[in-house]
Image (cartoon, rainbow, N blue to C red; front, side, top):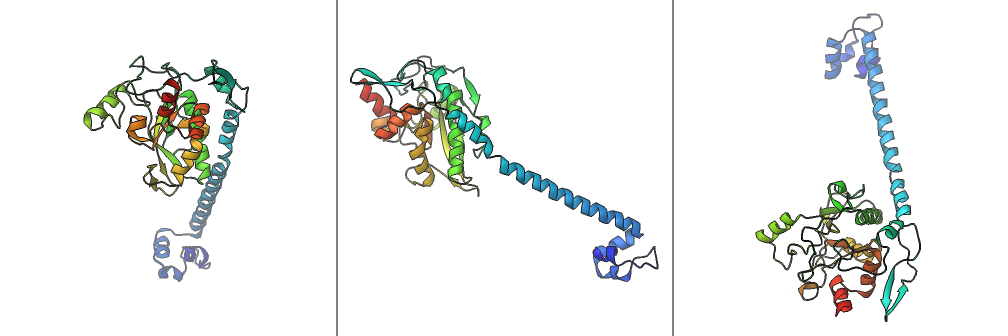
Length: 305
């Protein structure tokens, strides 16, 4: 095209120079477009379009670079320290958990001391075949879409109870930062009674899928997770194939209130191992279990027997 724009025959205003025949594009333009004024207009449009593309690319890069600062505001709010309110029973005496720092919204939902393993709406509701929901159709009233921009799929298509969702968004942000852009993928969150029953009837044994009224997914507190890297590669969280992602979750998930309920097989947990499963219990209980290397079932049996 430059043969058209810079090789004009100035003595013949209506005819481009002979250099046009050496390039197909120049030849076409020379045959179709006559007159240097038209060619100057086209040249102006070309550079205008090029500069516009460059401008929008710079704006987009700037916006992406500024985005990571936003979750820091959320993180600061979530981790804001308040007073010590949780207590545990030690040798018959009620005492505060050492150096407890709890998020501000905790006070609104946990005014009573200790853990509640029995109430359907408790974050620590213990569920197994012998300890189901009192109301088999239980549905909590504080459900919200998971509001996170740092999962590999659209988190807002899944719902958890509000506090659990906030903590998971916090976890997802830290996970993404720890692995420079690799993200958690939500495979499953809440399951309806109908869908749980469908799974059991189709193929899922009770050693893998919870019976109706005993599923942690029905509590709107549990998720099944995978990992997708920034290059699009999938990773499972299967303990048979440990990786840096499963190691990170094992070491850090409790800091955000999440616990792997099923990790010590049927004899202890009542279900086969399921490393992708994470259930929100509240931070203090999750950290207590992690520190003692106990599953929820082990701890529950210890304090009730």
